[in-house]
Length: 231
Image (cartoon, rainbow, N blue to C red; front, side):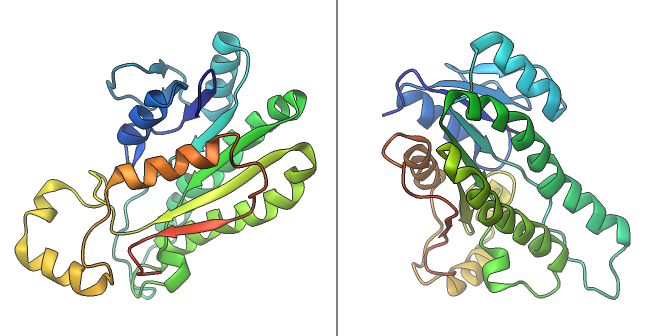
């Protein structure tokens, strides 16, 4: 499905990055992982900034067929009357400014190629809202809004941009093994999920693979919750 595609995954050692890189590689893609990790069968970028990352990939591979913005930031409890302004600034920098910059560096190359796929891995949190987690939900909501706006800007260039908005997905960043082993915490989580189970990262990764493929040429500006019916 993705044979000969060059795909970049940002912050590939967090969130759904490790599984996604393996799934994309299994579909035949050349996967470039940014942000560390030691996954087999993928390439690893050394650059840290968005500008240097895209320059490094273009120099090594000549193009970018798909960009996966797999950005993460702690979902810390922060009631509005207790939160510090820098907490909001830090969340916006990680979940809005960083992907905006890396997308901005990638788009010229996709325009030149006449096509491209951009997938942001965001969150279902802003769709429903989360009391005491407004900082996280606000920053994630801005990411979802970015997808809506950029889809209108990029559609005429045959560039599709969509968001995967997960929640309650097994992953080491937000649902680490020690949390999953806590029976009380698990019971509380499952009571909130209509599907009565946590999602598997492979379920998110396979959806990303579809959005990154040529099969997805007429879907853009979509924010897809993957949350077992929670959102």
